[in-house]
Image (cartoon, rainbow, N blue to C red; front, side):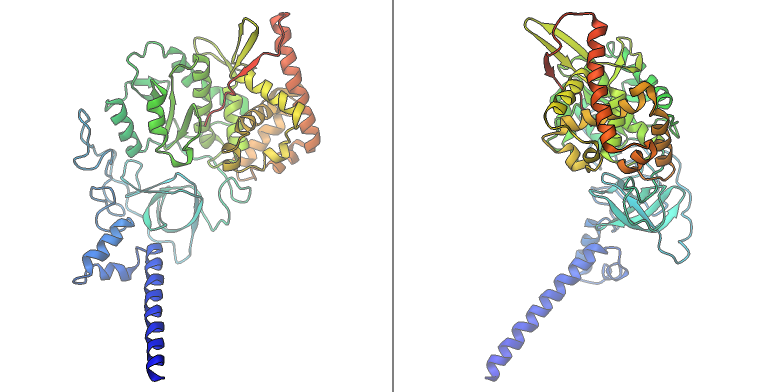
Length: 492
C-alpha cells in the first residue's frame, strides 16, 4: 500500500515540477526582459542558455538577425544587411542620421499604453534608421516602458524595442475603431531590411531617380517612359487636399519601388505576410509604395500608382489604421480619376478605358468597376451598412473583394460628386472629425450626413446608373454599352 502511495506521490510531484517549469517558461516568453532572467544570464552553466533565450526574444546583448544592438538611446544602426550578408555590388551599411536625444525619464509611476497596428516595426533605438528588432502581426495595446519625443519603448510578444507612436493613454481599442482617437501621423522612411531585399532583387544599391518627391528604386532598363508617373507623383497630394479638404502633415519620405515584371514583384510581396496570396497590382506599407509594370496597360499602372500614394496620404492627412471601407474607398476614389497621357490628374472625371473589338467591348479600370457594381445592384443589392462593418480580412480576403473595392470607391465618389455635390461638405466634415479623434465608423458618417442607410443605398445605386448613362451619352455612340468587364481596378 505504502509503495503504491509513494509511486502516486512521485508521479504527482513530477507532474507538478513539469507543469511548473512549463508555466515558468511561458511566463518568461512573455517577459524576456525580466530582471530574474537578466541575473540568471550571469550564472555559471545555465547563463549562456539563458542569454540565448533572451537574444531570441530581442532583449539580449546581441540583436536577433546579426549585428550589435544599440542601447536604449544609443547610436542608430543601419540594418540594410547583417554582417557578411551584402549581395555583390551593394555598398556596406552606413550610419544615418544623428544620435537620438537622451531618453526622457520614466513615466512618473503611472502605466501609459499605446495601440500599435499590424506591420508596425520595433527598432533597437528611437530612430527610423535603427535596426529592426521585431514586427507586429496584430493590433496590440502595449505598455510604455520609456518615452523620448515621438518614440516609445515597448515590449510585444517577447521583443522589446522602440515604436514611433503619437498615440497615448490607456486606450481600450485599436486606432480607427471609433473609440480611440485617430490622428494624422508623420511620413515613414523605408524599412531598411525590406529595402535591402529590394536592392538585392534589383541589383542596385541606390535610387535610380525620383518620381515627384519620392525616391525611385527600379529594375527598369530605361526610365524614359515614366514621365506620366513622375507628374502624377507631384499632382496626387494637391488633388487629395482639394478633394477631401485635408492637408497632409509633414512631407513625403517614402520610396517608390517599380518592378519591371510581375514575378519580381510577387517575390517582394510575399515578404508581407498579410498580403500573401492576394492578386494585388501594388501595395503600400513600411515606408514604401510598390507596384509592377509587367504587361499591364499603362492606364492600369497609373491608376494603381495613384491608389497606393493615396494610402500614404491617408496616414498623413486622416490617420493610420482606418477601416477598410474608408482607407480603400479614398484610395479607389482618387485612383478612379481620369489620368491624361502626360500625367495630368482630374478627380472630377472617371478614368479608365473602353476598348472596342469585333463583337465586344472591354472595360479596363474604373469603368469595369462601375459596371461590376451596377450588375451587383441588379443581383443582390449590396448594402453600405454591411460594407462599412467589414474588417480588413473580410473586406480583402473574400470572393467579393473586387465588389468591395468598387463599392467603397464609388461610395466615396458619390459623396463628393453625386447629387450635385450636396453631401460633399458633410463628408469632409466627417474626415476632419476622424482626424481629430471622432469615430471612423459608418454610423458616424451616416449621422454626419443626416441620412438613413436605405436612402444612401438608393442614392448610390441611382448615381451608378446615371454615371454609366452619362458616359454613354458623352461618347455619342450607338454602340451597345453592355460589353465585357475586364479588370476591377483594385489595389492594396
